[in-house]
Amino acid sequence: MSVTPAAPKPRFISMRLRLLTIFTLVFALFAVVVFVLFYLYSTDAAMNRIRDDMIDTLKGGIAGVDGDVFQIIADFTAEQPEFPNDPRYARHQDWLATIHRLEPRAYPYTLKPTDNPREGLWVGDILRITRSPTETKWLESYTSDTSKLFDGFKELTTNMEPYTDKWGSWVSAYAPILNSQGKTVGVMGVDFEASYVYSVQRTIMSTAIVAFGFSFLVLFIVIWLVSGALTRPITDLTQTARELGEGRYDIALDKLTAKHGSDEIGVLAQVFRSMTEKVRQREETLVRKVHELSIQIDYAQRERQISQVTDSEFFKDLQSRVQNIRQRKPASSPSETQPTSQPSSQPSSSAESHT
Image (tube, rainbow, N blue to C red; front, side, top):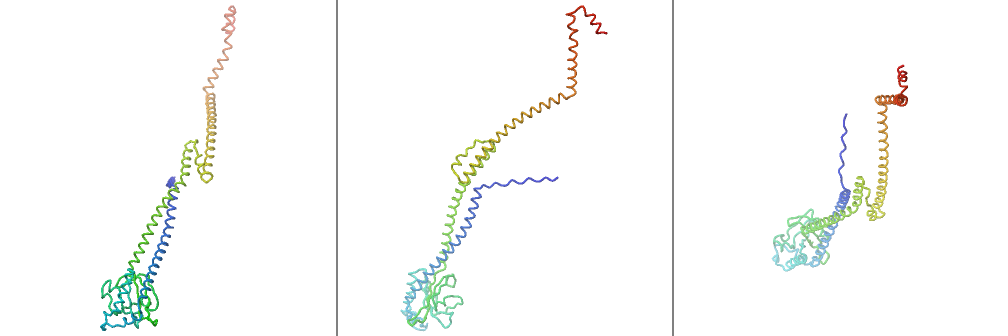
């Protein structure tokens, strides 16, 4: 016959720990969603701010460029003796340096258009000042199939997706340079280093993580305290139930009832107190009945034992002998008393007994 193994005892997990775990998981999920939304919103807001700063810098830079003078500079050739000592070109470069000085994040430059819509020729460049005079060459061709720079010959254009070229990683804004007749004679670009954008994103990320960690810690403490306040009455009732199981019915639940009033815990304490009183009364009744039943059982046992003795053959035989003795005793009594009272009649009595 197979023996059914005993079911394993379930592992005890306190309600406080369960509440703490549930609320922590819910908050963690909520915090992750909020963190992602906050990061995206903050990053988008920061990128918009960078974009606005670039556009403002670009507009201010173009406002300081005379389109007609720029057209003359752009028409110079490398063979002309005026290059690069022409003061107009020097003033143009000085203006680009001024833009960079006013907005250190900005790296401005200018190009002139060609017949190829995806080509431009370098005119001015701040990198000739901040890095090397030959960083870009005069009227050197620049072509690209993906750059949005060439859209800047037509209208103000921005590229907020960080990209990388041989000079570094950037985000950029471009706008056309117009002469007095409104004709596009060049384009000005303003680059912000992508490292600045990445730095802003990292700052947002670190700030969000610190805020998330601090909020998580505060909420963890709050949940711990609240869960303790919620589960403490239940813990008290559990301890009371243990004491009740050990037969202690003098348990005071008045404090718990008064503290929680008419809420669920207070009602539960009242019900528990009523149940305790009923259990006490029932146990007293049960003890009394058990005592009475014990007396009845003892009496029945004595009767049964007596019955067993009286119904035995030995007792019946003994009883029969006693009965015989009792029957003989009245017959022998006159013979014992007669010689004293009537001595003359003893021989005849004796003779009669023999006959």
